[in-house]
Amino acid sequence: MQASKSPIAVLGAGSWGTALALQFARSGRVVKMWGRDPSQLSEMSAARMNERYLPGIAFPDNLHVEPNLRSCLEGANDVLISVPSHGLRETLTKIAPLLEDAARVSWATKGFELSTGKLPHQVAKEILGADRPVAVLSGPTFASEVGEGLPTAMTIAASEPDFAGELATSLSGDKFRAYTSADMIGVEVGGAVKNVLAIGAGLSDGLGFGANTRIALINRGLVEMTRLGVALGASQDTFMGLAGMGDLVLTCTDDQSRNRRMGLLLASGKTVAEAQEEIQQVVEGVLAAKAVRKVADEVHVVMPICHEIYRILYEGVSPREAVGALMGRALKPE
Image (cartoon, one colour):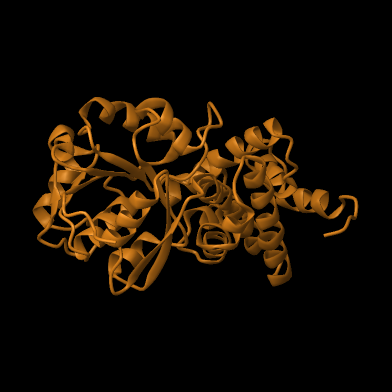
């Protein structure tokens, strides 16, 4: 499938937005990148790199920093949003009247909307209408490694197959491979729940619970993720792929994960606020724990691991007490 030759607007100049902008540019797409911090954009434009989040990685000539949102969207047939989940609705609302008529919108945002329990594609449909082509990018990827050009694979799920294919083609290159999917619900649920479980993995390892505990948490966490996704209308097979098991294993086992580091810091005795201050970037799993609990309760899905992580974050339960609660549950078939 042929990649689009029109510019793509990337909204969000953090680590992940910048990494994706770099990858699109390397694959030959003209990229216009906008962020909400004018001073950061000015620094990036002058340095021709994002020294704050991806230092040392120079921007290709076809990656342009655009401080004006309207100018960034002008002429862009594709728009990629890379903002935290709590900022998605605001961003969509802001761009809705500025979009080209034929513009297609995608996002690399992970997580349920806390106030409504909606997935990103549901929020987008509410604001942009049902006819606007939309897509989600997700999977086992760390921004720094994508920025450095290390071999990477991810998943793109879209409302229209042609959109997923064209976006995958324009993102893929010698060291980057994008797979396509029609299961937006499954891809989005995987991206939300894995962040919660990664906090649990960090807690477990930080407390020295060992490899047996870690793999049990990952495996049974995958069961919980799948259970919730299927209840919401996802395909079970999606959770065996990159956006499910792949992203979960990556986020739970590597210290590049902000969510895993949150768990490690909590295990060392720091509060959530102290850990957040030390990490210096949004830790999606903290809010996701609250949102996942809300959605699971609404659809009557039992998620004991995610429930205990919620209790640790919001009810002051100690990790050791949470483990005791999990281990003390009634025995049943796997």
